[in-house]
Length: 506
Image (tube, rainbow, N blue to C red; front, side):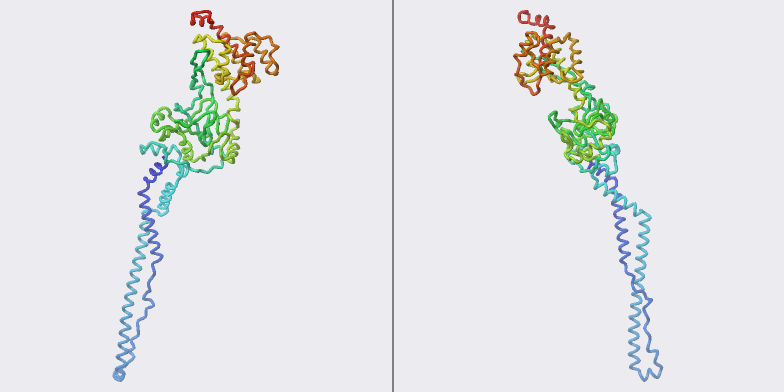
């Protein structure tokens, strides 16, 4: 794209530059000739020889006839030489004067045709364009570039010929920072929607007893995430190598940023990208333009946007940095970046350590748990609650529930209270023994002395020490899952019996 742009700009002034160069070259050549033009000797100091024969009177001419003739001959020779030299000098000076005048007249003519300073400016502009490495050096913003390409009927498309420009930046102002959001979903209506607002869901298959149920539940995430001055790298939580789209937008054009972090800056709620750029496959440019009235659309050639967003921000004049998990590869630049980001007056922290992440995870976990309950009700599955609990908790090494014991032990308990409140819609109510186990867990006391239902005691004894999952789940959480599954089965007793056709199997 950048080389195409330069060629468009150069072609518009190439003919004018060629003319300018010819005129400049002619002016310089004339000036050089004028300086080097040597003024010939004039006739001013050329003296006519004396005629010594005039010194002889008539008698002397007879007496000294021989000497007289010799003197007369010598004079005639000198006179001839004088005349020749005189004519030569006159001719040379005449030619010199004519050439001198001709040079001055031509210089005057050329200056009247074109101002030499303006000619130099045209040539200098041509060289600036030819040597430019980014849009800033061309003195253009991307809106102007879009207009240029549109007027020429040429789409803006990045390709392999575009390279990352090593721009300089001190990172001492917010204008040095630009955000990149890579996504598999084409933006529309000049905004990026959160997964919550976009209605994104998870779809999973869950085995309960001997049957498999299909569940679908809402992915609660009300934040939009960006990497700063570079594409996000792959890490434990995800890979973006196959993403088709990228949004590039100056940091200062996203007012709802709530948390800043090099690899994971995020805004709460949808993000307006009308002042940003959308990178998409070349074949989808027209559709993206229709769907986004204000965001600027930039195409690329290839299957993935990976790499192109880095090239693009460098074309815009930003300093591209390598984004690592906890900052840029350049540690000094990271320090400068964090310092200037403090002017945003937002949290500077990793997403995983923020209240937003806790809320997103807890609410999504609750949705999954509710989806499993609803799936069991819908499928009328007959199962052993203890075995089903272990299937979900992963005693066989394959944990299904994303919800873990942390929901029990958060200080304010608001998410567990929400879970209990949501369960009431299914007529599921927690008995007091769950709270008794919870209190014993918190105090690290044995539950042996607790007055527990026999089936609960049996389950907890049988599953003790069998946990094969990466997170430790306390007894109270395990008992809670068991109790929910037991009540779901009891509440659905009639439907299960009807499905099985034999009450004895219950």
